[in-house]
Image (cartoon, rainbow, N blue to C red; front, side, top):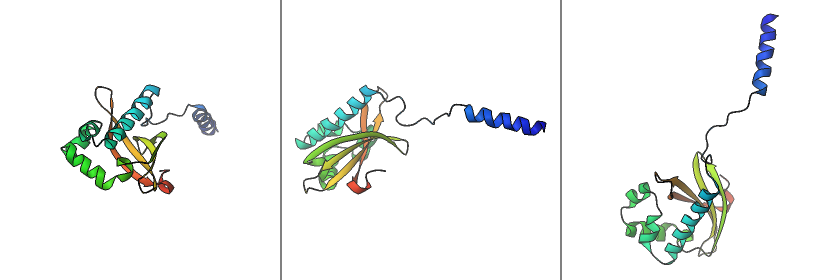
Length: 146
């Protein structure tokens, strides 16, 4: 009887304890960060429009810059594999999300061919507090929710 009473008290105590959420990618991201992230992506898109590889490459994280090595290699990859990013007809910023623990800015793009995609920009905070783009995955509009 005493054990049953203790178990009942324990269950009730646990039921009323606050739930501790896991630390997520959105934790500590404020309005200023959201504005900066959007501005970084907008500035990179504008650099692509001008074929300014040096500026566009500068918005990439150190990891991405190490992979491609030069602005020319980076621009070649974007021109050949990311037409909706390179020459979008329309750009619409959507939500900033935690996708599998990665801070991700979703951007709806209409490519030069009229196809609608959602670009999932993985963002990375740098040691100096600034944000850089650490990757971009294009998904068809029907796949864009995950």
